[in-house]
Length: 386
Image (cartoon, rainbow, N blue to C red; front, top):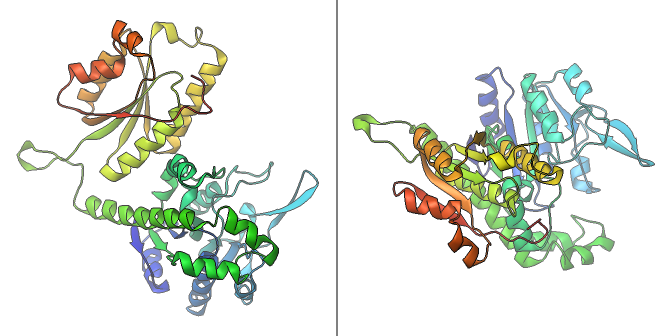
């Protein structure tokens, strides 16, 4: 993945000429109004002038006049009109774009959830289908929609982001452009009515567009691009591969799951972020004991387990299910045989006397393995089954 703060259209053209698979360029922002759609449309016009076959697959102007003006002169694939709960909504016409087969498609609001009856549940999946078909995509989204940041965003801003994109989607990106803008400039644009209609400005300032929220999101966007650049540089140097003399770089990360851990989703998101910082592959490992066989655990626990395993896959983990009477021994055997260097475990909330009577898995991992780094993660339990 290459990252840039301002990439020229010809830079993306060079990527296209070197590949048969569709390439993805992503404009990443930290809030509405930083200029993602505007910049995408500007680039579309520049590419069109160079003779590139580019179409608008889905563009959201949000009523902004300067953005809407840039649609003029661009070919737009008509959107699908879908009636949902008595309201007609517009969706990307995936079949229409595939039939048109342009060189490049412009796709806005990538984290969007499609209306029921669509071929895919999420728009990012539509983008994946376009890439598979050899169509290059220029898209846009905000950093708070990354799945692994979901808990962090909620803690920092008090807002739970409902529409998310798995981090594995970001790994498909060939070029990331961070649209940075000072918080003061963004708030000036908001008050001037350039982001939302005047009647919505006061509400926005009192809620999501608070200065502290925007500062946090801006820092996260800058960090995400910086970490992407670091991962790309490390990949170019063969990070994670064996080197001469038998030495090796840091190994893989393993996160340990139980059948229904408190805040299991939060633990997985933390693991995904850590794997990204370490630039390594990671495993989500669940050890099924005889007492946790599928026919012996209740339906709710089974649902929690399956949800967590699916989330782990979406975040990029390799999911592993083991069977053993001794979870700690099974986890250590797996770690030693799969070049794991770091183990992440959710911190137990049991009373001290319960832990004293029966050592927890985490405590056994500490006692029995000195060559691995063990990360005990405390996560909030609010809203989860104890």
